[in-house]
Image 1 (tube, protein in one colour):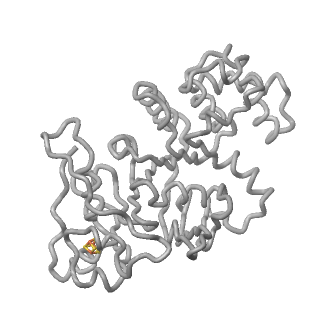
Image 2: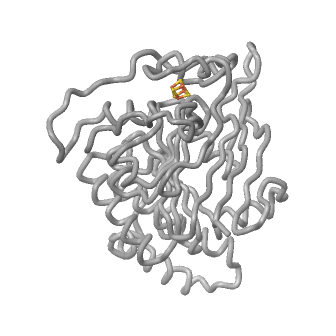
Length: 333
Ligand code: SF4
């Protein structure tokens, strides 16, 4: 059984023109101890997917359908109070802006111990403080920082505090939505390295969301590529790097410079994503796809199993058995 199973997730935003289908039938699973990345252009629905799973959607967004199973337990119908307890203890969330959401008039130590005491009320204040010290050590901050106010810390330190907070109850899954985007590159590297080390030490799984595809390819075990509210391709990071199958994934990879591969011209994907109030019939990528065939404007491609445990939603691969060649492998990083 997977740790997290998301099936046919649908999230809509109410708009004067009708429902904006930000996430439309997204399915994927995350295994224990795995880092699963969600990638795609801005507005593709990756953060909305995370918000839908963790019930952080705010009006006008609403969960319009789908099912979320966590360790076999149905989350979608769980009462709100039960879910709030669940969200910290089994599944925690680190958002890009979280470091700015620390309470400015409370010392870091009080904010960390509050989380522990709220969920484990039998814990003594001394034990909670001692656990808070250990949590800071996990994110490589000295214990005396517990007495600091958030404004006395750098952005990187505040984000480490938020990550420490997300680890307070030893969750099985941490959802990280652009956890380092607001930080400088060196700080980003330090935090990402520590996240990966902690994942190995503590065994939690991560749903990692970022627009930084090269970073994702480096740290994730598997990656789901989203386009216009749908999942386009899921595959092992090394498999996507060697040769992505979906034309959109290939386009994304061509849009990033290679650190180690040969010099190639960086190319964007022509066109722009569709209007999700009235998306085009057929494949949503069709207006931008250089490989489109007649079927692409007639019917939406279904997710089809690919090699190495991956899957791809593209008509080219539905008919692969009938003799079609896969799209040429993408560039190497
Ligand atoms: Fe391109 Fe057609 Fe595949 Fe969509 S289904 S990505 S339009 S080839």
